[in-house]
Image 1 (cartoon, helix red, strand yellow):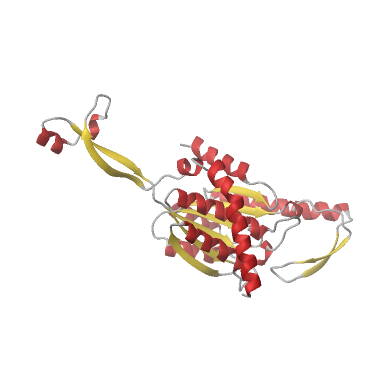
Image 2: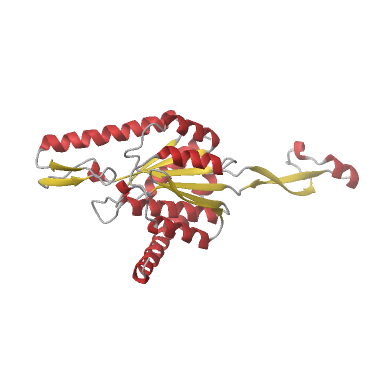
Length: 295
C-alpha cells in the first residue's frame, strides 16, 4: 500500500470512528447491554442479611460462623465474545449513491465493535468471499477495533464470489464456546447454506445483517446499461427504459430477498435489513426492542 493510500485509509477509519460515535454513545447505549446477556452470574461478595433479601441466597457456613445471617451476592458476568463475520465479495463494491455496500458493512461492524468493547466484551473478525480470507482473534480495546476497521476497508479479496458455507464452518471451529455472531452480507449469490445456518444458530447467538442498495430493487430509467456482474464477470446489456424490464429486475431481487429472509427465519435467527446511504439506527433499535419483548 502506498503512503497516499495509507493516509486515505487512516482518514476513512477516522471518519468511521467519528460518524459511529453518536450511534454508540446515544443510540446503542444501554440497548446493546440489555439485549446481550453475559454467560451467567458470578460471585461478588458475602454481606449481612437485610429484610427483603431472598432467603435462598443465605450462606449457611458464614451464618453459622458469625452468628448472624449472611447472604451471597452475585452479579451478572458480562464479558462475552462477539464475532463479526463480514462478506467482502465483489458484489459489495456497488453503491448507487454516496455509499457503497462495503462501506456500510464496515460502518455497521464498527458500531457493533465499539458497542462491544464499551461493555467490556471481546470482539473478533472473519472476512470471507468464496473462502475465509482473514481471521483476527477476539480481543478488547479501541486499538483492536480500529485494526478491525482498517482490515475491513483495506483487505483486497482473493475471490470475487460469495460463499457463506466456509465462513460459518470456520466460525464453528474457531469458536468453541457460544458467542454473539453478526453475519454481515448481501447474500446475493450464496446458496446451499441453510443446514449449516441452523447448526451455527444452535451453537451461537447468530444474527444476520443483510446489506443492500435500493437501486437493486427499484431500477431507474437511464436507458441502455452495460451491466457488469462483479462476482461472475458476466456483462449484459440492460434496457432500463423498458418498464417491463425494470419490473422484472425488481421482482427477481425482491424474491431473492424473501428467500433469504425465509431461510434465516426457519433457522431461528433474527435478520436486520439495511440499505447503503440510509440511516440504520432505527432498524437496530427495532431489533433491540423485539429482542427485549421476547424475554
